[in-house]
Amino acid sequence: MAVAALTVVAAAAGCGKSSSSTGGSSGGSLSGKTVELITGVKSDPFYITMTCAAQQEAQKQGVKFKADGSAQWDVSLQRPIIDSVAATQPAALLISPVDTDALTPDIQQMQGAGTKVVLVDTSVTDNSVGVSRISSDNEAGGKTAADALAKEMGDKGSAIVISVKPGVSTTDARIKGFNDQMKAAHPGITLLPVQYDNDDPAKATSIVQSTIAAHPDLGGVFADNVNTAEGVAAGVTQAGKKGQIKISAFDAGPQQVDDLKNGTVQVLIAQDPASIGRQGVDQAVAAIQGKSVQATIGTDLVAITSQNLNDPSVSKYFYKESC
Ligand code: T6T
Image (cartoon, rainbow, N blue to C red; front, side):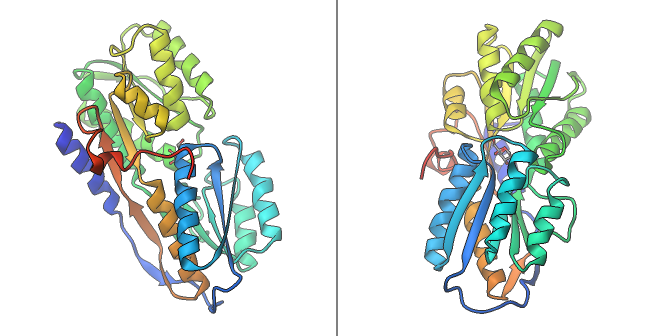
């Protein structure tokens, strides 16, 4: 598949589906109302980019804004943040839950107390949670990553997916999209079992090294998010396999973009976290005012390679490390 086509396919996935419902009955003015954002991991450039845009939008809309997130991708670290935010009874909560089920009761309790909940990026399986859900089409992104990686691998050799943890809506969908597409369209590639790194780059590096030792025909890795991709790139480089073992990765953090520029990584599937944050605030504000909200919103995905990374319409998707 040509690079230009890749970009179009992935961007088309961002069209998403949307439907409307009413934001509830609390209604009224925005004066003194607070919108809180709780992200998956505070230091992750994806979430920093989302937070910066949400903060700007909140200012524009005239609501107070606060943001927090845990130091690591961990239910036991995110739960106390949710519970302490619940005690302040914000008008709205934007949240990226780090698990599809474990935090549902905590979020539901806030929702029951009147806070308008908007799920940003990740979601939960219980459909009664949240007035709106905003994310990339992660399954479509995984499919695009599979086609790009298979092309780089010449449709042969072994490939592995390295992901964060099971039970994360976004990364689970990426794995599904990737594996389904590999099986359907690239039968020459042997898919190894998925491995998980707990969002720890050092663990991703060691998984790559042990996989290379166990499978000398390893030709490609799909790295499922920012930290995983950073660790995978380091592992491939340290093994002396830069450029030989191909990498397709989700996201476009600063280190990932450097790794694309220096030839360690071949394709990045960038999301649009700024749009997720901005639209999250807009939906929260609509819900606070009792106006109509969109139940689901899909945001853009763009495939970035060495051939298009200098194009401003592509580089605008690079993530930030500060506002
Ligand atoms: O890939 C993003 C996000 O979409 C995912 O839910 C968790 O990881 C990231 O934050 C990137 O590290």
